[in-house]
Length: 158
View 1 (cartoon, rainbow, N blue to C red):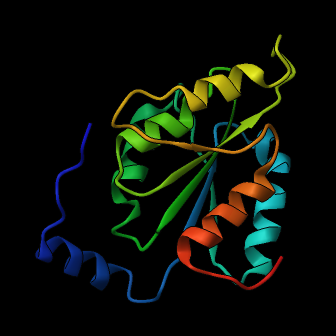
View 2: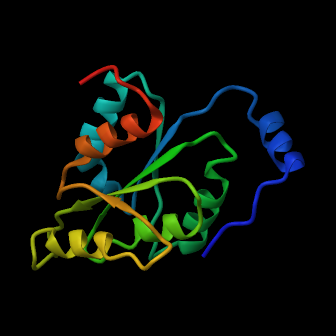
């Protein structure tokens, strides 16, 4: 699914609504219990001097909010999205379906997983054609942040 191009008037309206430079990276998880697994990404982005925001949005419990977040992300100045997800790992794919921004998926181990994170890994790497999601190793949010920094052209930090 592709997104509609942003008109100049829409871009100006967003710029007027958000006059200060916002974060460059959006970090998302489907449940607040996944936040600890993403802290290495936050620390790595801080080490690179890259601003970020953190949100809890479930692709299963509130898909409309995920779609709205992804659709507006570039208008708000975000340039890369990092999504941590376990089990069926729908969040990275839903984000990628609603934005042209790069999406990096972080497969997470989950207590209910029978495959110790492999299920999430396979779900993230097997996106359909036209809905690309980069994928790092299981529970490796630090690598997601390093990749985001490289996408943004930052060479500082670790």
